[in-house]
Structures are given as C-alpha cells and as structure tokens.
Length: 440
Image 1 (tube, rainbow, N blue to C red):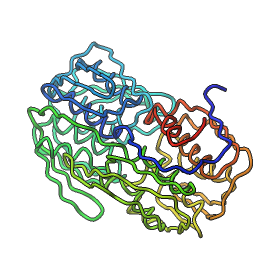
Image 2: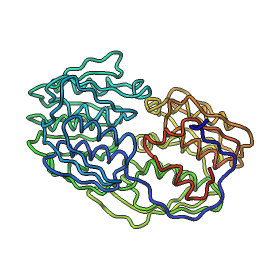
Image 3: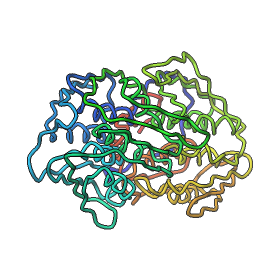
C-alpha cells in the first residue's frame, strides 16, 4: 500500500546535528494575531504543515492578504474587527484543534454567521469547552452534541467576562484571551497551568495584560484594545517535533544528536523534566531569550540505564503531546512506571491514552490502563522480533511517528498506515530520519 510505511530493521548508530522546523503552536498563534494587527507582520521559519497552511487559508477567507515564500510569510493585518468576508462563509480547520478553537475567539465580533468545520478526527472532539465561555462575551453558536460543524455569529458589543479554565487547556485559555481584545473592559481568567505562548506574545506586543502566578493556576487580567501592532518573528524549532528525535536517540545504541534552536519554554518542557527523573540527562547549550521565549540547543546521547517513574501530576500539562513517546521510554525502564490524571490524552486527535496502551500491548509490554492512568512494566532488555501492524488510528500524526520511533528502537517487522498524517505537524519527519541514516 503506497501510504503504508514498512520498517524491518532497527536503527544504526549515528552522530549528527539537525534543526527542526518552526514551532506549530507559535506558528498558528503568530498568524492569527498578525491577521488582527494593523499592518505588515513577517515570520521566518514558519512551519509549513497542514495545520498552519489551513490557518493561513482561513484568514485569507476572512479578507487578510497573505504571501508565502518557502518558510517566509508576510501577513497584512486588517486590524481588530477588520475581517471582511462573504455571507455563508465556511472555514475548514482540517485536523487542527488549535486553529479551530483559537479562531473562534477572534470571531466574537463577527457580523454574520460563519461555519466552522474540520476533518473526521477533529469533528469527534469537544467544542463545548470553548463555546461556553465565548457565549458569555455575547457571541451566539449553533452546535449539536458539542461537536463540529458549528456556526458562530458575533455581537456588536462583546463584553468582558470572568472565566475559570480548570482543564489546563491552553487552547481554551487562548481563545478567551483573543476574544477579550475586542471588549471594552477587563476580562479575568483563572487558568490551570498550561502553555503560555499567548501570554508571552501579548507581553511582547505590550498589550494590557497582567499575570499573577500561583502554584497550580494563574490569574490573567486582560483589557480590550483599539490596535495591535505588527509582529515580526523568527519561529524557533518545535519541542514536540524534536521529542521524536530525542527519544529515538535515547533508545538507540551508541548515538548522539545535537538539535539546534529549540523552544524550551518551561510550559512545554515537561518531557525534559520527566526524562531527568528517569535518570536521563539532556544537555542544554547556548541558552538565550527570544521575545520572551527560551531557546537552546539540545545535546542528547544514548542511554543504557533508565529508571521507572511515578510521574508527578504537575508535569502533565507541560508534556501532554509527548506522553506516547514517554511511554516508550517507560517500556525500557527498570521497574514499573505510573502516569495518572492523563484523561486529557483521550481528547486529542485520537484517544491517545488508549492508543498508547494498545501500542505497548502489540510490542509485548505489560501495562494496565484506566480511563485516566496507565501502569507500564518496563523491560530493560526489550527487543521485538514479531510482526506488528498499526492502522485505524484516525490518522493521528503523533501515533504514526511514535510507532516509527518504536520500530526503529526495538526492532520487529512493522507496517504503519497513513504515513501522510505527518503533514499535519511535521512534513519533513521521514526526510530527517533518512538524514540520520535510515533507509526507508
């Protein structure tokens, strides 16, 4: 089958330096904020994945001028409440939960109904978590069973709200923050700890935001504005995409990898902290601050002795996209690893907690999974010699790439379907593997 990847050999040792494409979260946020800025914004190293390209397509349909040249992008922002579009507009967000939820926050001031759609995977996800707070601004929604498709119509006078975000969802938080910019008054958000890229961008743009940090949550106070200034941005490399190569190197033999210019924002680096607790040291080099974000080079080496972990719950939100990979590390650890309060994994592109357990079962790794936890019984000598087939995972890009890492690390004969799923977030993934020496 042309869309199936077959892997029959484990990886050969390598010593390489690579650079990963731009951060997906930052790429989408930059594009959406730039569309409502007044004037020209420019981004370099913008991730050219399906999620980001769908973002650019959506803002074009809202009347925004976009120019793309390789990974260089110019957006001529139309200002707050400056979108111009035809009636009965449909915005297709593809597979992107970030795009679909964030753009709704920008539409609380829309003058006519706009329909939001997505692919089969996105259409299974919960949108009540965004519709409910955005409705408080005065926007009206038509939605069935809390899923896509839905329609949104804004209000002429969106008013500020108080909102308690208790899931640790940066998407929900950011959607409300974007909506708050269109209000007259102060919106107050009590948010469980999650990614803070939007807060850092708002600070850099000198928008009227105040953040009070507490142990488990933040209080965000944000007032409406009349104008957003353009933002030029050199997007740093994505830690989530880098993680596939971090874990591959750790699990490979006699290998070493330097990944350049990685965004190591503390709200995204739970995987580095978890690996450290598992006796895996990753060297941070050339650390610097770029527009509020921490950037560094990461030096990773193969690891022989891996310790099991009772994973601290406080690290969950900062590693939510990397847990499938962390499960692979736990599979080779000495002892039993335990991860709890991770039901949010099943709210992703596929039910990832269930898929994590299923992949481990196929690998012959004992595990016990519930609706919000998993115990993994590690085997430091784990080696696979059987055939494994992976399919029907809703084309979840992270399931596909995790299985590739598993196949290369532990051996066996793997057939993994839907290799084009990588276009969602990491189109060059297979080419990077070839550069490291893999023959596909």
